[in-house]
Image 1 (tube, one colour):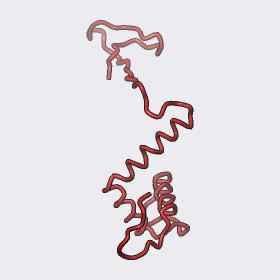
Image 2 (cartoon, rainbow, N blue to C red; image 1 turned 90 degrees about the horizontal axis):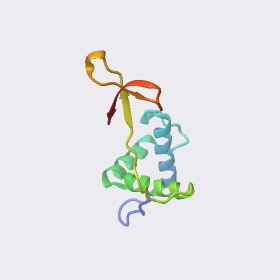
Image 3 (cartoon, rainbow, N blue to C red; image 1 turned 90 degrees about the vertical axis):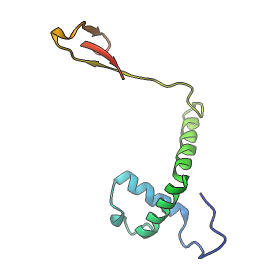
Image 4 (cartoon, rainbow, N blue to C red; image 1 turned 180 degrees about the vertical axis):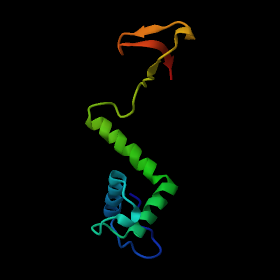
Length: 113
């Protein structure tokens, strides 16, 4: 979390309660104005959210949480490989050759995405 600024008004709200409010909104999908009274005022939370978003702090927090979650699961911090999936598409009789995907038990052309 960013430290308090040296100049200006002292911080009156804890960063943890602001983060909890932002996570509550992300989890429930509620509107800013519907934030429960247990959290700081919605205008304060909204101001912090927009500031963190504009400075890139939210992406940094997300990246570090992702690394910690991967390590807690016993995996390497950064992924070493990616997977590209494909989709079986139904075709018409005159549409050309048809294949059979045994794993999906479907007939059709296999199109890679």
